Amino acid sequence: MIYAFHVDATPAVQGNHRIGRNGRIYEASSARLRDWREAVGWAARTVIRRGSPFEGPVRLKLAFRLRQAKAGPRTAYPMTRPDLDKLTRAVCDALTGIAYVDDGQIVELFVTKGWGPPGCGVEVIELVGVTCPVCGQALVDGWDADLFCRSCGAHVRRPLEVVT
Image (tube, rainbow, N blue to C red; front, side, top):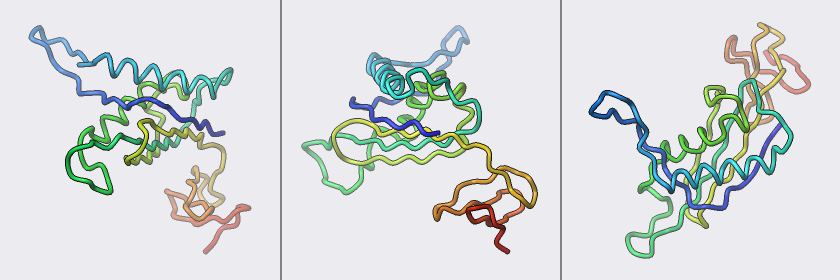
């Protein structure tokens, strides 16, 4: 099953945890981050509706778009702040409990950052049920619609024929 949606809002970063003077750990968050996470949550809920969060392994695809600054160098790619990993962290945490039970279930992550109208395209894909006929381990989708076993290295064509 796949949940796909787009968030039409300016992406915000989630910073690192900080240690206060009293030794307590806290997250330095802002109103922008809170608004962004809320927008991601609502966009996900409109697609998922009554569905329950995935409980198994998931693949997450994110495509961030940022508004290009009017001043400064014109580049093909946004090689500036915000950092891609901090943008990703905010979305992963916002989807916890909505699209999947815990963000530790994400086993594959594909993320891009480009210029365009601010927002983020999101795909959450449940990885289920296909096992290797050679060793019995879970198979992973390949780019060419074939499957590959991470354990024994078997190349499996659909409909499940082992290629030697």
